[in-house]
Length: 324
Image (cartoon, rainbow, N blue to C red; front, side, top):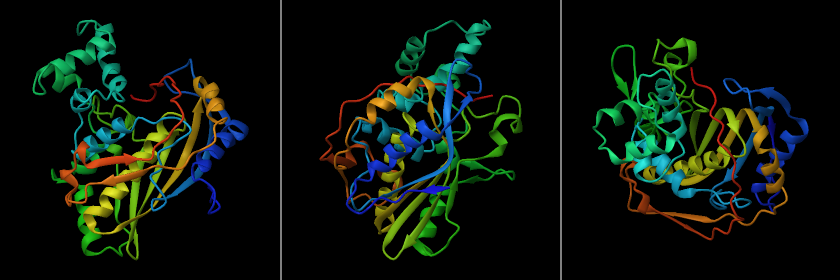
């Protein structure tokens, strides 16, 4: 595993840009499962570190969709698995994963043929308790479900995150405060027929740790789309760290991100090269409503970003892979 520490004077975003260069130079080209038209250029075992006292790590070398990041995180924290909440907020980062099984069913004549646009519009227009929404909008045992509603073999339901918060408040020195999204019961061939997750968790698990009056979070990602996905992951888990620190009564410490397979998709190479021409700007500041002391009480209105001066966005096509 390669750890890259930035000199104190250097913008922490250079870690991300250096990783892009590393992948371009040293990556191995591989095929993509279930998507023969695309390849990835991949390296294995890398790490980024962000000191949250220095600023909020929202990348500046391209504009990042913060509203979508916050709504997705709030969706996770609800323990929700249905895209209805996101669609209602005009956040469409999970649309493809819901549409993929519907399209497959339509091709076999089981359901009417709808374009993805019409499929999402139908989910938005219908009430959340409508059968169509409940069946086709649900992604199964995705992140929020595993964080907040992990089902055990003896029919209990575990709130991992709730447990972690209580441990941090009562025994913050413990080294076992881990929240996992990796549940083999619902992954690939290990799952019962029809029970496999739409996408095995890429951000697999995270560990929480206290040092004096600071809370740090260490995330392990088994697979990372460095161009499209990782900028979201950095901001999302940095924000989660800040939220957890507030409800526990600590200061935010570090957000540490360790990668397994980290890669650039072949249809993002040109975009990455364009991004590498840009010089990072200072990270913005994130202000969180200090009155919120319960992790379940946060709303979109509780977050204010200041000082964000990014370059224009760089678009790239989402590659829908995996599944079973």
